[in-house]
Amino acid sequence: MTIPATENTQQSCCDEGRKKPACSCSVNTDSKSVIHATTDFITFENRWDHFLARWGINRSGHIFAPGLYRLGNPTADSPVFASANYTLSFDALREALAGIDAYILVLDTKGINVWCAAGKGTFGTDELVRSIKATGLSGVVTHRRIILPQLGAPGVSAHEVLRQSGFMVEYGPVRAKDLPAYLSTHTATREMRTVRFTLSNRLVLTPIELVHVLLPLIAVAVVLYFLAGLVAALGAVTAVLAGTVLFPALLPIIPTKDFSTKGFILGIIVALPFSAFFALAKGMSGIAQIIVALIPLLIMPPVTAYLALNFTGSSTFTSRTGVKKEIFLYVPVMVLMISVGIVLAIALGVFSFLGVV
Image (cartoon, rainbow, N blue to C red; front, side, top):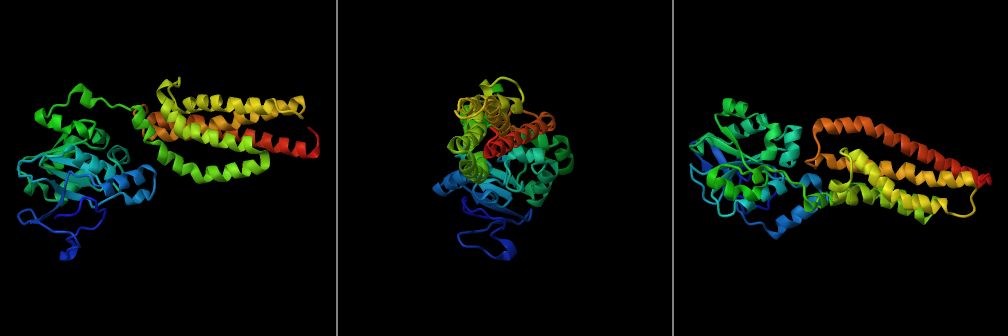
């Protein structure tokens, strides 16, 4: 089947024998398999789709039909690669394979990237075996080898795939761009196997995290502006920006191992100027100055730390068990600190209104 590389659809253009516009279909009559066709050319529409995905816009819309795709003019001896039906994953693979004739087996990962889908089980043994059988892959190629991205390994049991489908799993390099070099020897170098989480890798995650909290942030900032003034509103904005932008940028240099404690440290640092500002404010008694100085230190650090936890699923620095431990250990502390800070702020406001402080 030939389908435009930019078309994101859950339906086959050959469904029920009907062709959709700009589609042509080819069916392998021996294996009864339908083969989609794609190219290694990334269009402006693809790039725009990537931009929207990075910003979390229409998150569930960056998917396309699972199935078997042909890239270039592959033969029965051409390599087979597995990918997710998430546009960024699929497009990264086909762009990296520019000029290479190959087949791409796209698994139904519900529009989730390979790494996350492997953790959730959608890029896993059962789905891989099901896709191999459903596409009639054994009737398309003469070899019995399928190349998977290394980051998909946690979800796949290679020996089970071999037992159930007859296909041997071969794990390629971490990065799709290394595939051309890898194919020359089918041996991954240490560099190809090394997972890196560079500054650019970290910063590319910030837009989607920021978008997720943008509306609540605006609402909280507006309320704080009218209740406590501009500085309090800026404190809320600063705590959120620290957790979504500064934290990933500074991640490797912030001491401690846990993301939560890293977030607490960063939150305390950005809270100190606000604490000092309120502590030095005139017109308050000694106890009131102490309370007003404590409020930013009680509220801002846990907000930053909680947002920092969101990056555990995107980082190579964490493990699933480590993340669970952090959640059970530190989230109660975050809730307690914020609760105490809010109670103190309300009490201070009431006492100030009554003229007690």
